Length: 404
View (cartoon, rainbow, N blue to C red):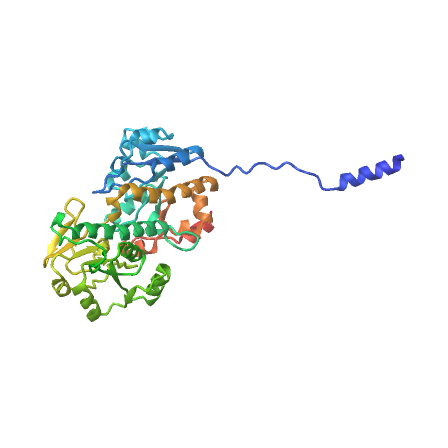
């Protein structure tokens, strides 16, 4: 091969695309997460279970757990320390974390312990989170995210749905116990056996709570009737159950007849805004069977029975017209271990994703479902509903993200 040909080939080789080493994407961020012990009345859940903490620690994140945070859900400090969590014995210390993950909204005392410019995950409950609470969070430049408003890729509220599944299933378990003779009930089984008429169950509401109440009742062999004003929800329920369960729109006369025959009535209506509509009048309740059971899951929004009044886990029931009423808000807290797993199943992947995105601000910017849960961003109120309710100035979260 002559020199001219070699020079020509060398020249062509120089003109060809060359490999170039690129820097590794380093936008990932190690998070500092704090899990306080819940102090709200009869709140027994914990935001992250030990298995979820292990996942976060193995991904390089630091997790600080306040002592006895998992005690009410039967997890010890040792369960957390063994998977890599740091146990702290000073409440103030856990509120120094960059990201604080709670189940219930923070109290005024807990907000005072926060250093500022942090991220807070918790539920948004207007009844226990009044105007001055929001103002304190805003003053400390907190980014506050309501887990009950976070959406997934299908536009569903995953944590609300999980808690609804729990509440619906648990409502039937509670009713089953209250029908027995052990707590002054009628002494009947919820369901049916050969040769004995099945229990009559009425479910008011065909959403997630209603669906899982129906599933549980049918599984036990009960006869079930479902009422809802949404034909779409009733059709979807029948399709999801693959069963022609008895359904009806909420017609007062039809509902009254069903209530008179019912052994158990589950109130599973939920309002998108404000109070749950009161569907069952006091007169309707007075015509129900003696010893029948009402479980009003809607009580956290006021209840859908005129005779309902909020109770608690220590004294959960009362009788009105010889009908047993169970009206405990936050039913999921009665099974804290299961409900804590349900919360962790959603929190832990979110926190992993936040780390991969490089922080909370990047996550808010790139994930519209996550952004839907933000009601305060770095001290600026971003919720129109809260701004209108409390007369506070608010900013559009989309415009704030565009400015980043």
